[in-house]
Length: 312
Image (cartoon, rainbow, N blue to C red; front, side, top):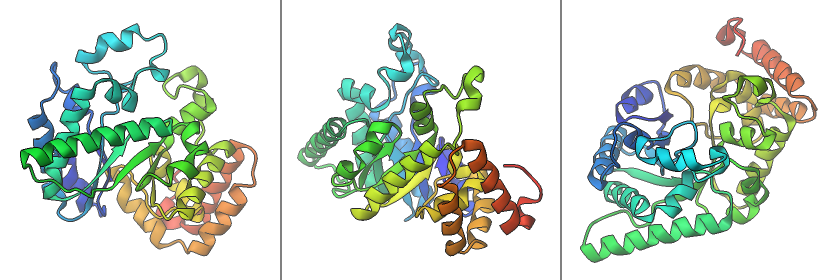
């Protein structure tokens, strides 16, 4: 499941989640007018890990963007001529090393409390991933010298949210431990439309054939290198896209807590062979509206009791 606050873990697990596929850590920066301390980070992460037991928890490092800017970073975003393409997410962390290290130290310290995985957001080049990994290694060395216990071999992955990351998926797959496809930003950056702008809202389509092709590229590269892939974002929480994603080879979804029960029911009632047939046909269509109409029709046909006439 996807969570933003530690108190969301309980409801998420109660609804049947197998872990936390996306723990957004921005709330620590957005909830006050000062930068969170290492201890602030540590206490929040421990709360989540203690509530999850042995279930995996993927902690995404700071993913500040134009749509969510804390007061302490407001000036940097106001100066940017185009914040959506500016200093955000992993770029901001790499340019604010002390802040980045505080977060990584807290994650590593908390890692002894559970099954932690670290994920870097909006990675667009191999250099960015390697730089982030190098800073993580530096933090590990510091903790070792201080005698602070931490999990040394925790998995490190990345969000796939920009076309360059998809194009280089084969190369990234040799270096990452896992991928998470962030469909919200991937759609936005691929189709060049701001999803919050009502004048171009009609262009923002998860069913666009280009998006399906990009997802298949990532899944193919990951499969060849035996690296797990999760899809998060609004697309993975929409019932009509679940058969498509399963048929394309995806086996892990990170969704909103309220979506979990319905999506699990759909997955249980859907033979993989049917999902593969749906995916094969959908990927041959050349218009987003045709893809989405077809997927809705197939979902209604296969799971009429679950869909109950609602249009997702």
